Image (tube, rainbow, N blue to C red; front, top):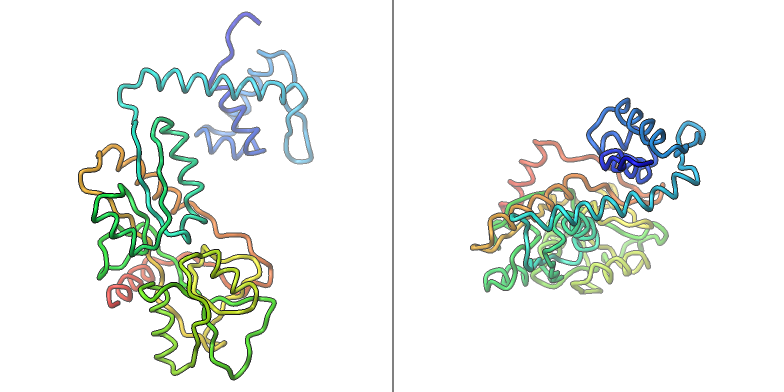
Length: 316
């Protein structure tokens, strides 16, 4: 075992261990499945040990494979650090990002993980506040990037995602019949609160605002406890929630548009890097796991629907 191990083979090996599949690993490392299989055969020949064993239709690591995995991760990490140390174009500094906690819960973990992996020398400073306050901070130059609810009349932002805004209630607690709708919403200048109230006013349905909070956790807790109805983006739905439709007496709402605000004067390379990561995360994010009896059909918005969403929101 005098010749060095091949880092490309090790990266493929780690991808298989992470995805649990030769096929998914091939997609991750941008190779064909046959090329991945060939690499693993050569790696096993180089190590002199079997690294995989059949497990039904799939493959799992042998004890020797588990042993190699630890070394492989360390070698790849050290290689990346060595390359970054001599990269004159690497990004450094602090990036101040603002987002409402609704989006922070759902999107920020993946955005941070992806960005930190490719730009380890950039410190991320995260602020969680309502879109209204984030817009003011952006105007004062207190933030570099803000992920906000797009509102053409209130703030300028580049739309990066559109999804339905849903009426939600507890799936385990029936709503009282012939009684005003109990609402849990944001403060008076919350865009979703205004949409919910305007919608109910237009249909003549009575309602009472029982809970007011900027915290999505507080709003969700009130809904899940069966104490109130609220409005949430489709991606924020949680297990135990039920989507209310026109059949329940709740009119459809204009879709949510999520936008990015960028501080003028922000480094173009830094701005491009974080914007690309945010856009990629929002494009690829999956909807949350929910109970089987959650009353919602999940469909991506068509181009026509997205255009209609823009028309509806532009009228706010």
